[in-house]
Image 1 (spheres, one colour):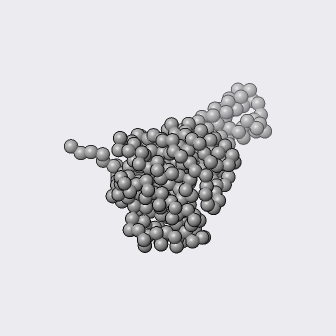
Image 2 (cartoon, rainbow, N blue to C red):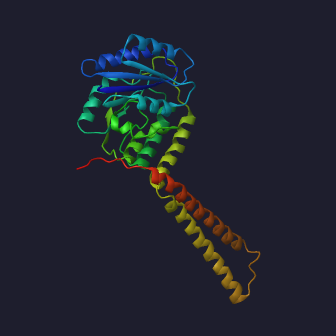
Image 3 (cartoon, helix red, strand yellow):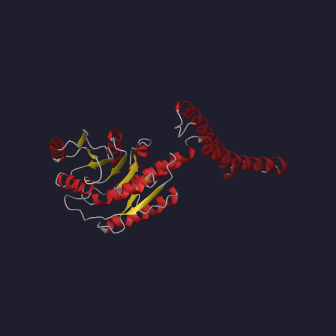
Length: 307
């Protein structure tokens, strides 16, 4: 099997037969492939269409969820089922062009681990494009990965990449970051065609960007401090303890040296508060280390090569 095409589906019954045919037109001359449709709890007839396609064509497979879990979970299910040497993801709404796939696969063959699509010319409303540009700018700076469109559904991977990452929440937006964390640094992008939506309506909403930014904070924190929580919490705790201790030493000095009253000074309460919070941060770091110790002991490194 050369290529596995993983396609999350949510209420896209009209587009599925056309999408399957477009994939066939693009890949049949060159690659052996499979299509894995993951029905993420659709309320229309998407699953019936997928089941019908699967009965007609042996290379079409389907996974149906009981209810809507989200795109990340759907992609993860597809990644787990994929058998191809290369894995390609795309959306089911016909806005991604399967004709781009052969060139993206060639880029993987040339040595890249991940090729991300870049919808340079988008056919989306301004309410979607402006927030997307801001989101991509922030993510690019935080991730240190020079991609213009992290959220493009059309991406191609070597199978090893998707087998060594785990998606949940809204983390499908940050697959390049997850891949980089696992040591897959050869990441690039390709300008791809973006078609106007032909059927149905967009599933986009403001909450997706809000959830996306919260997940960005999570993944950035985890990426830096998963193995060393004390470095984060302990540093803040020690800093607060030093400031609070310094304030209290100053107050103790003026009390002893000059007999000044300090009991009603707001500075005293600030010093005590900083020390209490500092101890809490330091204790959180210790607890994090204890919890992480069990995780690290069970974690096995991926060995790249033996001689």
